Image 1 (spheres, rainbow, N blue to C red):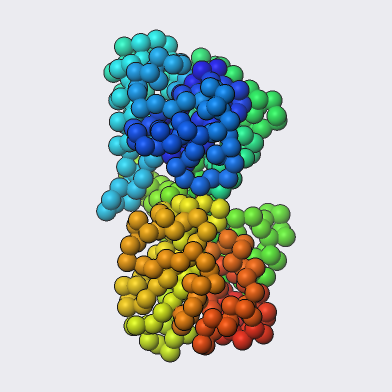
Image 2: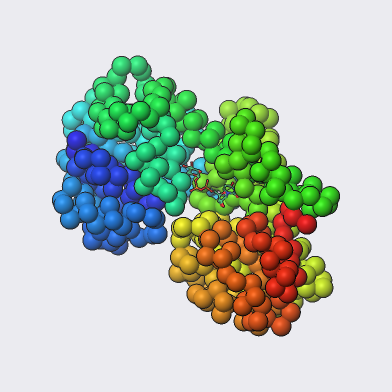
Length: 439
Ligand code: UGA
């Protein structure tokens, strides 16, 4: 099929490349000229495993191309995916839908024939009818333009795999048996034939599928982090506890790793946007649980600062602290709402000289937090530090030999904020070892 993908960030660029991989002819559209240029040369403007390979292969084969022109996109194909960002509004909890509504308004005047506009962006429930009304008002093809909803569940760091082999496919339509449904089933034929559970539903259910899934994932993380708070005052070990709980299949171990909590461009803003929307709909009380989920998550960051203060005899001012980790999670360079950087910035504000290291996230971190120091080599980064904060799950950090590392510091002290360091081993190597949720 010939299809377009509008908005080529983490979601859209991956979707475009994966649709080409599935055999479609794809035109990606983004308003950022530099991004379009990079993508056309086969390179993603961000780090995502396997994505550069797909981009290089399919831009070379001619099956994948990128543009900034809506006229070109409308002429290219009759199936349009929209994957633009829906960030949190500055100073409010609600979603900022301006990118989505602008994309729809810009595409609409060029839709002169029957087409399906499929939204993948995460939105507050009730957005689909707004998109339909805009299209019907501004598209010359009018009511011949149909709207479909296809929420995306990919995780950064395994986005390609999650797109090509998703654990479920959700398709939302205005009515059963529509043309839009036939078009999307053809588009996803290979995924459906591979046995992927496919749920065709109404718009509202499809919209809610995404926000509810992210709200559940955030709740699961905050649940185990709330238990970590209890572990900290009772001498229990939350990492062992998570394993014990996880053996019950009704609970499950996946997505319940305790530590510094969740960050990134999705979970934090999605729980807030979901609460805001529930409030608008008059059922705010139903989601007050998410307020607590958010509070627990923020308390983890505070707890690291408190532990750092304790480790440094109550005095942070003028001290030197090294932070391992800048990206919001391993295998990405995305620093949006990164818990590690939030801690680093707070320490800096408290008068600490902070040095940060990360395998992929330093360029982005430097742009957003120019007041912090950055060193690529994690061994060199601890030189003369008073304290090391281990705030990332990149595996190469937990594999560093604590004996060798200890020689770089006068009085080696570490706080493990991710529960991935072997406490006994580090203590034997001479470190004063503290951890979130562990004795
Ligand atoms: C999340 C969801 O997992 C995806 O299903 C969803 O499609 C995506 O948001 C989105 O809305 O686009 P992502 O933000 O890439 O994906 O990252 P996750 O792997 O879910 O991690 C989110 C945060 O939670 C990270 O900071 C991670 O370190 C933390 N986390 C994750 C934990 O603290 N413990 C865990 O057990 C899992």
